[in-house]
Length: 161
Image 1 (cartoon, rainbow, N blue to C red):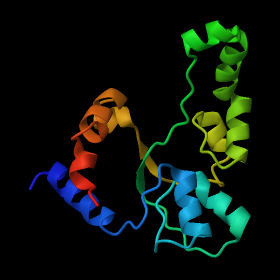
Image 2 (spheres, rainbow, N blue to C red):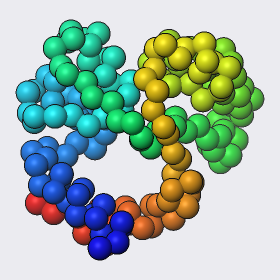
Image 3 (cartoon, one colour):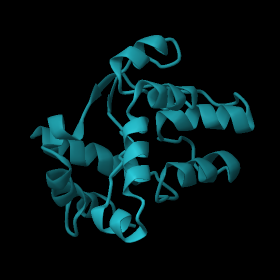
């Protein structure tokens, strides 16, 4: 059995136990932590600390040893910034986001920093996890989208209610 087949089989078994498939991390957190639906929550790292802050430390948290790198994408959309004449502001924000100061603010809000210098400063705040990127494992976002999430892709093949 190929690794891809094993992975699809595992994820298929996992999804058979999902009572609600929300469209994002915050929705899943709300369904699990506030509505009390489900036995476990698979979510983003920063959601764990948000749950603790909002609802207390009432859940067991398990961190994987290996995980996918969940990056916070930022894009300057030419057509939009030109239409609204705010290119300089948007470009400045994008640059600030990836600056040392911007990454420190992100880390203070429980988002794992990408800059090594900032990650080192905040290493006690984040669990040591081996992270891999979509580019490394799946050949980039375009390929991953087509393979896993396009109509008829792996997600459609695995998830059916």
